[in-house]
Length: 322
Image (cartoon, rainbow, N blue to C red; front, side, top):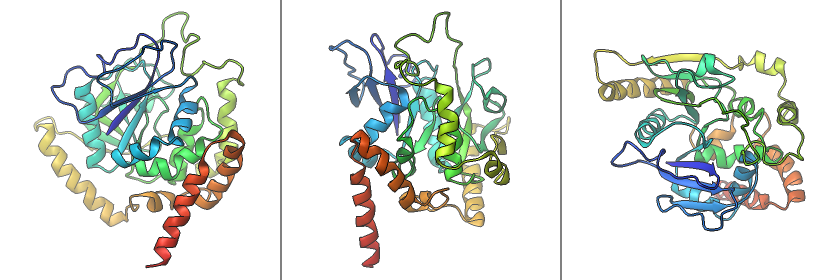
């Protein structure tokens, strides 16, 4: 498990690593500040690069470093740096995500947090998790195989992330039990102080770009994701089902019972095969077509998509040989 953050000058990991003697995740940061002396002894990975949040993830995921990270981690959270979430909560969150084999997920929002989607994402303390058709761009957590095989290729024209949170579940065609909001923990997202976001914000670092809200319709149009298609597949952001915590019982034993129940439900419903091939089955565009579209644009940008194309060709050749 990995927590990936975009951080500026003066940032420290203390808040994220508090309240836990041990942690089940590694901390990785991309430093976008100007201090050449920036370091993080508690971090497993430190990268230095200016840019916007989703531009940075696109560049990192096509860099030589990503292959090692993809092999090392099953899940990673890509979180805004102003969230209030500590190591104890992150441990519980990642364990729940792993137990229920979620492909897309996020912690619930603590009451009073600022969000466009607080009505469906605010914590329900009596619940363990809720299966949904949506997670927000604030702190999405990705199954690494699904992200590497599919989602990173859809970031070729993404800087602010607007519209991406509508796109990701559509690639999976809104499964009933692979996208979730984990209510066992909540994250705080305080209202920004007057004057924020400033020049160093991960969403406003490049004022020369078109406004963020223009990215939303462009992202959906690129993949022909229309309102009619979303409505036909019941993909409007909503909660599909709930998994409760019983007040009279501790969480851990209930996790095990509900985990077994969820596994049985997945077997009855025919869950998606894990990994790159299974994650690509529900695509709006076939993966080959998605790669070709991405390749044409990424070639202009000078990013090494040919690595991913070559890997897919090698995998197909290997499969044909069996």
